[in-house]
Image (cartoon, rainbow, N blue to C red):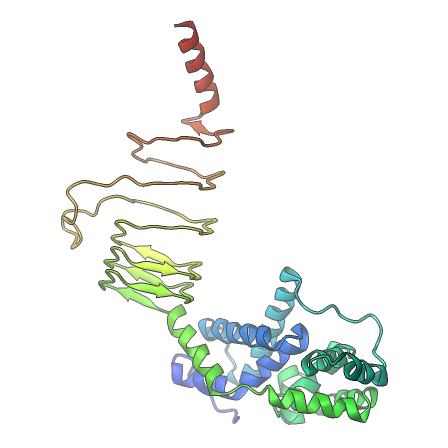
Length: 332
């Protein structure tokens, strides 16, 4: 890829970057995680994160190493948090033992290849994966990893020495077969459009959003009566001036969620008049521990079969109020 300045404000400019570096990010993620499918997911997320933060990169010529740094950090973070990466081997595999093990147990080639690669240190493993999976030159790999070309050549040479001929041929063949292409790029930009989505002055009555990532999207002045969201990532999403009548939220994680100015729309709002009466809200089987209700209209609110330890109303503990109430009923 030439070192020409990329226009980061356009989708087309970033599309060129994705096309060139798709297998680089995929390869770096795989060299850490050891799982092809997971590596694709992490690489995709890395591109999306980079696109949303593209304005922070002041030197386009460093885009390769910048992207590599992003995907590496994301992969390591995923490995630490999820603990699903194949455990790093404490001792190197003996190549002939590994080949015999493959023949004897008929393991999947992918597993054997990862065991062979995982016997290498990460600083050696990553250049090998980039060379065979991505087809990058020594010079390009050096730029991606911020190394000298001679250092890259030395590490790939060490890997070849460590793995015997039969095993290195298996690794080369397997990695080359994992090359990603247009379908991967299509998924990246499909997600990019969703992540940077702005829904403004739109009618989404009965709309059905399924299996999508709407993180950081903004819904403003939208009519969303009876809209459905299923299996969604909506972290960081913003709803402003929205009619959410008949909204149903089930099986959701809402830590840090904020609800302000919720109620009927004002008379001059286009959604006003849909209902003459405000239907009551229902909170059922919800964990509201530590939540705060401030300046709200709670007339007629019912709280039933709920844990009330530590709950206060205007600084007064509810349990103490209930004790006084029960005592007065008993004495009355």
